[in-house]
Length: 421
Ligand code: HEM
Image (cartoon, rainbow, N blue to C red):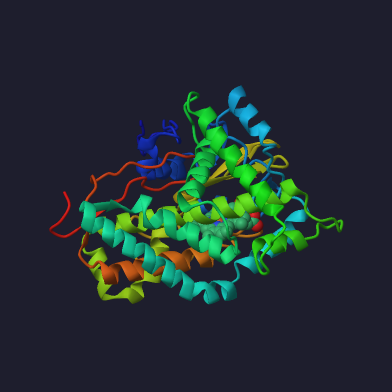
């Protein structure tokens, strides 16, 4: 990485390198200060780094469409394309890749399924799932001396809760769903090694086959996402085609558990690495909602998201042509000192603690925000109470997931005081 905070030369960095993912803050600072709308030669995307510019883009869906959000970042090779084609893999406009009229009704469907009332009524089950998964974590800590949160709590809780809230029964196990999603994330938002691409494409294809089978099931539980998809009518009065229903379900599953698991990972990392924080949260659990909001601001799980200009437009003083593809650096906006003073500090008491853009804003704002918050707050509340002696047992700088869109430590090793290495 080569950057000089006050030079006018654009910084050199690679968004898809682990080194960048682990600590993107100096690059973001440089971009915000000197190149706030910057063309990235490696990805051919215009990087938008300031809070106000990102907010403006998100609030103007006419000028900035979301047609490109699910395009593969890395060109897929023929064997991968063939594997996807064999499964008839297609993700027609559904939710966050939909700038068409059909978005309105599908968004209403997602808001109903993830409403505050549904989240509230799911709270006892969220408590139960978290408690069961903490039993497993405790058992693993006792057996092995240490455990990796990214492979335990952060993986199982979001998947189990999401399937419960969406009313999907008979799904394959947690590990299969996790692997399918992880493969999709690497294939479409990463830079997979060409040799690895076909295996990832096979996993993504299996995921898609399961999605299309699931939306066509005969036995659809009342109140479930499947029943809602079956009843849904498009603006022209027609029902959803199989691939449209599969696309909605794909969006809800990928958006709904990967991000929340990444939130859990970043929260544990900060709580255990920042001196005294775990203890403070154990002593004052009332701090957890605002503190975890600060984790969201500083370490956004969905670190960046795309848009495409539908007309020539000037943004941050830069003229962009029609068709310009933008990458909105959500994590950078959470560290913009114009909006958040001393952004590097997690301050639960800051006035605008919910003012971050981590869940987006406007027409596509995340409908799952309350569910994600409820899950992570429940995990933290139970964990600090049951494991007050938990400590960080990984390297000071853990490895990070490398992806254009998703960001979190990929290993979160913990142990109990006096035990583990
Ligand atoms: C910490 C966890 C989460 C983060 C950081 C997050 C972030 C986001 C962001 C930034 C967007 C807006 C994308 C845009 O403007 O194009 C979004 C949209 C969306 N999220 Fe989340 N999300 C999280 C959890 C969830 C959960 C638990 C669900 C549950 C299914 C979910 C479902 C969705 C859906 C369906 C959309 C598309 C909405 C639309 O286009 O109208 N998300 N999310």
